[in-house]
Length: 293
Length: 252
Ligand SMILES: Nc1ncnc2c1ncn2[C@@H]1O[C@H](COP(=O)(O)OP(=O)(O)OP(=O)(O)O)[C@@H](O)[C@H]1O
Ligand SMILES: [Mg+2]
Image 1 (cartoon, each protein chain N blue to C red):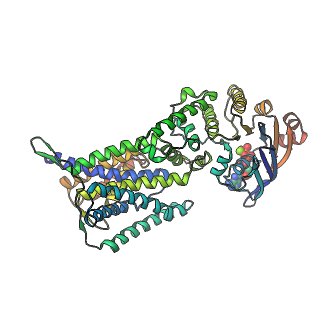
Image 2 (tube, protein in one colour):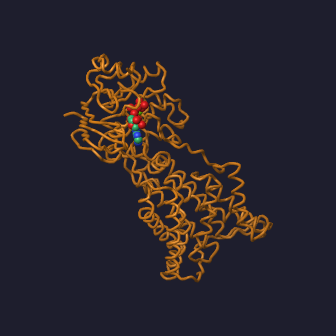
Image 3 (cartoon, chains in turn blue, brown):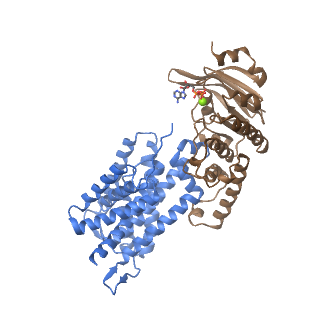
């Protein structure tokens, strides 16, 4: 039963990683950049919810909605100010800028909220699930994480594959110049991608902080990196890949912590990534990218 | 008034003068050919016309509107669409979605309508699908609508590129070597398709082609380019019998 407990915790954590990984994968697939500040948007989302609930005494769900709105706007602004001017720059320059944005967000949070972590009140109030006469209890946060991540993957896939904006995103991800020549607004499409990714980061922030209720300015950093690993693991650029990668990383991390060594759990995650990349360099569901000339 | 008026167009890449002092006038409804030896600068002219490169000299007017130096999107909106010498389809999209991607600008609904699947989303998507199917019909691609573009045979990919370009509703359609890689039978089919497309969709066509069977078969007028400069222009039959043109093609 302890194993089942751990497995469920792993799936729950993995679901949160999956939601974060979706943001990484979308932005990478379409803007062809690694937005290392993505994890910190989660933290911003967490603080927005915290502030809305404690200072403004708003209800949890409403606070999450406000956080989604704030993070969406933040994502658009970050892209416009920090990344758009570098559209023609080397990927190294963009990467360094993204790390800069990451530190900027962390330090802004430090300035505003101080270094002392705050205690986050869970926004989830659905009932927990009891199985086998209460031998296994799935916490309500875990239930919410799993359901929400599945819904997000379904909605996102429908949006990308079945709508005009989604088609534009796919077209831009394949060939920006050809897309432009077909009248597709590439800048708007990239902006939309950041908006969606950052909105998802706010949802991930709500789930993460509800599950592990301590919030500080570095809360988003490690989950951000793990979700990045998840995205690479599943095949960066692939939506189902992000989901599978997220779940696997979550499960490996929790099982590794329980059965191998709590100190080594993170190392195990990265070791598995290295092995996967040696066997299949494009990740589990990744496609080979043909550079067009 | 001419549909396309190019005056003294020029561009340099470093020391290389790829196009120099190039002028071209195309009337509405023309089927116009641009020919010349490899490396003459033909594709570069398409790149200049569609805003991929900004010209260093000269002006481009489309239907009276000055489009010199405008962005790709503005030029596409003004009415120029193109295909590519090396096929550049959205290979991970279906045949239908490739054409629908080209329709984007003509069927407006908000992203929110798409996310929340409002009635407008369904209505507009249905209209787009219908229009896309109409565009696929002349190219015999209706049965391939759900095929991934990359899984199409080569000849069909070339046709799909034309359909996608037509989707943007251009006044002027630029085709860069549409028959490249096709066998004589496919080329003959393509020639018919280009003629019907010109008449049915009321577009003007400017095409680059090395296949002289196609050029002499459907182009009414020609411009010949050599080392970035206009060598000769006029009626197809006259141009093709010009000794200068023959010399440029056969070498010394
Ligand atoms: N972006 C660029 N930078 C530098 N040189 C270029 C560029 N684009 C084209 N050129 C050069 O300009 C010249 C004309 O090239 P272009 O592709 O227009 O020829 P073309 O007439 O289309 O030839 P082909 O029949 O082989 O397609 C070539 O010498 C080419 O190398
Ligand atoms: Mg060429």
